[in-house]
Length: 580
Image (cartoon, rainbow, N blue to C red; front, side, top):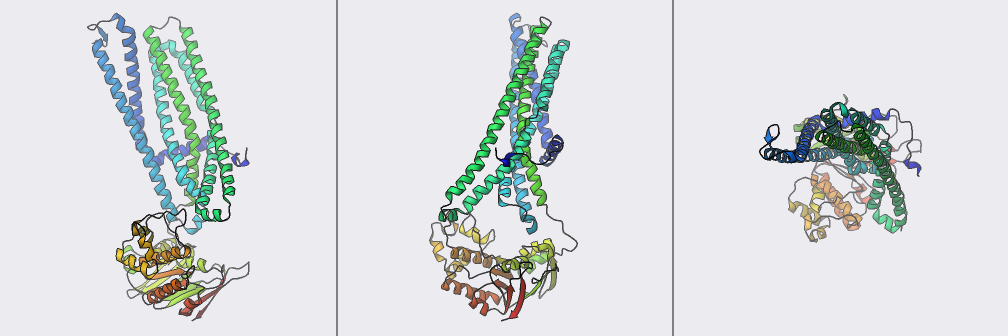
């Protein structure tokens, strides 16, 4: 078998680790819901025992009783039958309530975990996100969170079944009295053997977590790079990669089924042997009613044991999904605001997003490198960054926008109302609300065109249509459904130039006091590039504008040009500024 499926490294105190994870899982799910389910399950088991005893008494005692003769607690047989029917109906209603509450707990917990993880991803710093892969995040969202919810569900089922089994075994002792001790001890021994046996579910579950991440990486790469795969006729390579991952998954499934089947067969054989031996030893020491009721209760206890074992295996097999989730979330824990972080109030933030700025000064902490460590942007001026590919232009823009190494950045902005300072991760999050950034590689989402452009904002349709016409994209309005037509992106239905202009338009529709554009005329023909340059000239008169570009015409209209020079391999890029 592939070495990817072998457990590596020491595994100290695995049972203790399992108990710790189960405790954390229960705390996160909420004790109140679990306590309610336990109470309902206890009542359900008690009603089941009462119904079984009543049914056995009716079946074995009805031959010697009449309709009018007392049978149970002074009740005639008709009343006893009515009581039995009532118990059955009540137990059915309670069981339905148990199932409904279990599903409510599972589905609500799943939704909450997904929302929390997405929130933590959005709130994480760039340094934290650099440590996570796309496949790992997809595996968490699509598989491991489902496995976490299944582990919780099976843990609840296991607890309910353990409680029911304890009640059934206690009832065996009450009904059979002293003669039931051998049966009770044998069943307890079988229970202990069943629960203490190592099934390997924990190790297989950890393998499943790694396999999920590998599969998600393969599928994600295939969909994300579909055009590249076709162009390179590399479909066979990806299919072979997928086949390797799924082969390991099939082995994992077979191994689980094999272990479960052999274990269930051993357990059931042992329980039947114990019950049969007990019956032979008792002889005539028990009445028919007591013997029958005891055996029925013992059978129910055995069935509960079967449920406990199965639920335990499923719980442990899926619990590593929760372990992986906790590990990844620990990497995404939002950093608490440090003393060096500077922020502004929400009212000030809202006011600054609507006002015209006079100046923005960005600076970074001195980390001993020779890269640009400050930049001043003034109103009514275009600042352009240029330099060879790979010299760090996009990295510099990302840092200025608070999207990279935010912890080291400081922003000082001023307008007619005064000056304000922001810094650190908390300050960067507020700067995101004040800057409109159009990255070089725009990303479209599988939503309609309106939502892709506004991303939840509210702009009049006439504004959007006017912008599309000005940028040479009016033909997109002719599609069936217009702005509200969904975009199916598996086949990349737009050209690179169209996607790039849509990314610029998305930034311009935000209408922020500062705009940052990365290679705004890249991927465009001469006409489209001139349209973009015209828009930039106009918007420079109204706000702070920062761009990176290789376009000589765009650089010629800049008021300040910063040339980023690549440095030797041992040093970062350096920057030189000159006035245009």
